[in-house]
Length: 435
Ligand SMILES: Cc1cc2nc3c(=O)[nH]c(=O)nc-3n(C[C@H](O)[C@H](O)[C@H](O)COP(=O)(O)OP(=O)(O)OC[C@H]3O[C@@H](n4cnc5c(N)ncnc54)[C@H](O)[C@@H]3O)c2cc1C
Image 1 (cartoon, rainbow, N blue to C red):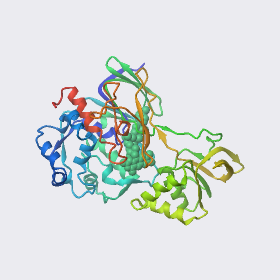
Image 2 (cartoon, rainbow, N blue to C red; image 1 turned 60 degrees about the horizontal axis):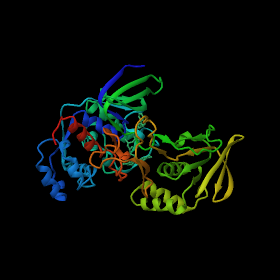
Image 3 (cartoon, rainbow, N blue to C red; image 1 turned 30 degrees about the vertical axis):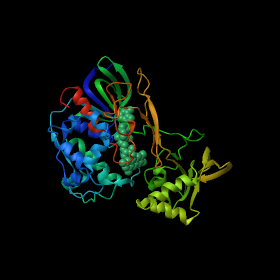
Image 4 (cartoon, protein in one colour; image 1 turned 90 degrees about the vertical axis):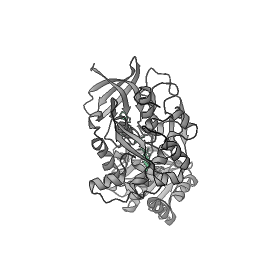
């Protein structure tokens, strides 16, 4: 067995939810500085926060949560308006203080699922909504000589470059272990016992921690179709870029945003696309038409669908039944609203989403979960947490980062909002700051 290393806090997951916690626990604490826009829009909050001498991590989060959820408070401080005009509009500043002893473990590079989304994928929201307040995208672009309009949607590559810069920019590289997958979390007399494996070498590590922040995102376990032939070589478990799919005909299975993206991009490079989904036309079309005026790629898929070009065939309320090899191509049997149909294709692309993985917890009371979904295909099981600190209601000192905490509903600009209440709660419990 490896030596067991102890840390005050362990964060699991280095995505947009876990990464900012590393920086804040690493000593970068927010202070209220106010801004013209914040005072204009939220004069009462501004007047109250003006009285706070110390860091905002010392706020009475329990008291505040009765009026405004901490994620919303910090979102308003960060984005007092939706448009970015100037750095001075952000109503807080970050000052470097003493760090607390923490370690972040994440199985891929920092930046979370953005490491694996399609190469050309654009965000749903302006680039600056994906930034952390301690490092505005405008500042990052300035520092790196990047020509970027931060109010435009941002492409995967630019967003990842931003996230990848964060550990070094804020001096946290030594406390962040990438390529390390946590495989088990158990109770321990010191709090939590965390077992991890290096991705690739499988070397085992063990740690104990007094506090654990679970920020693994909503996509740990990729869904499966559970049909014969799913693992044949021409069945791709995700989509990256059109060049990966030579040949003419593809089936895209999904119906969410990633599948919409893949189907559109493959059609636009000239493929024959069969787009298979379980949902009825009305549900899919509602989202496409709601999004077409704000998002250029939804304008494009709407246009393709309206063109009724036979090169783009949508199969609604349809289920893949089996996938077989048929000579040099694949044969896919589909139940299309009760009628069986066999389609011959070169590739099948599965973009059927994933789910959060809570199976790593062993020996605890079961986490209490609630199902969360909205019309924009946001769908996951969240853990019941206290509204003021995002601590699991039945496991003390276990915090849920980002969308895994109950009540976090905004699909955009919310994923890093849990940072401050979690960090503040830990620092207050440790007596390192006073509320
Ligand atoms: C295709 C897609 C597009 C999206 N577009 C947008 C958008 O435009 N705007 C927006 O605001 N949100 C968007 N979202 C929502 C998205 O969830 C957030 O952008 C964000 O990535 C969530 O951050 P997170 O840190 O909670 O999770 P993730 O980004 O998933 O990061 C979690 C990290 O933890 C790692 N991890 C998981 N399990 C373990 C383990 N056992 N051990 C170690 N590491 C582990 C994961 O590999 C991952 O790196 C999108 C989601 C998807 C799926």
